[in-house]
Length: 473
Image: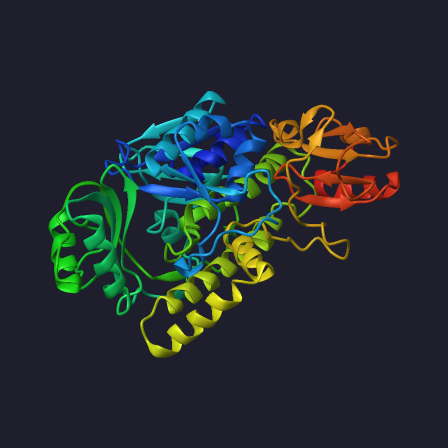
């Protein structure tokens, strides 16, 4: 019997498996695809996801395969540079091929002891008070204490679970890909500027070496499950721009709609949902993969605590309480961005106004922090502004703060040198460092890096250790 079976070994499923294995949870990941994705789609890892990778010692491995870009110009593709005040040691966007991200995260999970089966699909399950019986496509039945659906936008687990998935169906379709372009740059620049007056979601942006990112509105899409061809791109470019720009040699091709949906419930009994299985939205702002990775970070330590027997009552319920509002906010900002990409006079007037407002650093920073998830504040009750927020990667006497979080444990960072983790030392580390550049006497960090307490009183700290990490040993 497994502790957790995860359906889907994309970035969300692989990251969740690794987080669970850090706490010695028996994990099996079932991936229906037998081979990695054939297309090389470039995705962007935003600031908060980069920070989380640093917290687990993964960042250097990922940086080898990525390309850093300025952390600006996300919102509705309004091209504004990031202000200087972004509070992060990793204030950049990391462009990286999605199959590489998936491979690195899967390798990481396997190194930690997770089992992964490819070519194995979940087709059914039944849950009871003791666990979940999972049925596979080949008829095999497996037993687990919990099942987590990380199986994407068309999630089988979500459909079988029967939870509501309210929202809006897709109204528009867009082709997106990377390919080489034969036309000279001068012609591309002039034609794109002309077409964008009528079609905002349209661009050809150079990556170097003759390779361009191409986005063009699509018409007459009959089956979104079928990947487009280079001929589809040529046809749509010709129809909209009057030229196909000589596109050829595609790296990857895809199509997307603007369907926007969010599940009513992230958990029903012993079955949970994460990533695209729980929420779908347009790719504006490049938030989807990041949202799923952050779901996994939030859920992993809580589910492990429950399985290990030290979780306080209702800790697992905070997964939905915290992540559902975050997803709802992402859906709202992608809705807003899609409206701003409309060519209608009203949305374009709002776009011009927002473009002016983003010249104010505070407005620009607010929107960048929203897109990159740096601005998230969980509701932990009344307290200083830092409560419920992430803490940047501080310099400590022992090294960098995030290096102290590699094992996925809690952490008390104490500038007073008077506090103790006491009976929670099997789950929570303590660092006494009066030199830490921390605007508080001491803080309690959860394993996902969010500040759960601020203060200097030992009894108050003990109360919050109990709230988040259960009874002392």
